[in-house]
Length: 100
Image 1 (cartoon, rainbow, N blue to C red):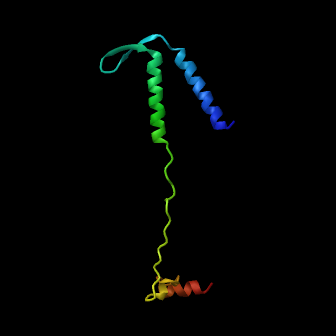
Image 2 (image 1 turned 60 degrees about the vertical axis):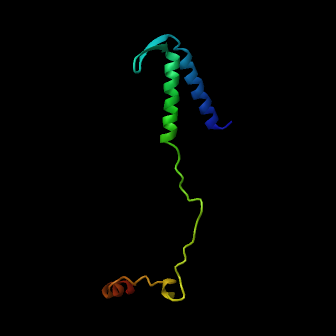
Image 3 (image 1 turned 120 degrees about the vertical axis):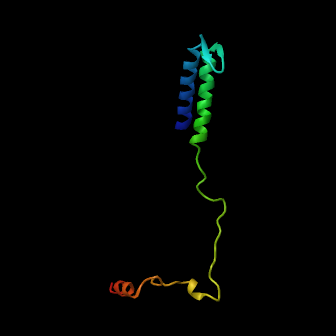
């Protein structure tokens, strides 16, 4: 068995034990007085928490579905194929880097 399956089973068993040990009636205020079992209240809030956690912590798509290649080299501009690394530097900076 995978560890994820084992952990999921343990959490499910733990939640069921807690839920079924809280069967007594309780008063719950939600736009009025509602008298219902703690089992129902805890179950509803657990499900809401699972849904909220799933929405908040879902994995984002990190890679695009399609990759494209942009080719900017044209016959008119051959320097675009192999631009000089010193093209944007001043003359003083070029001399400094050429000493190495």
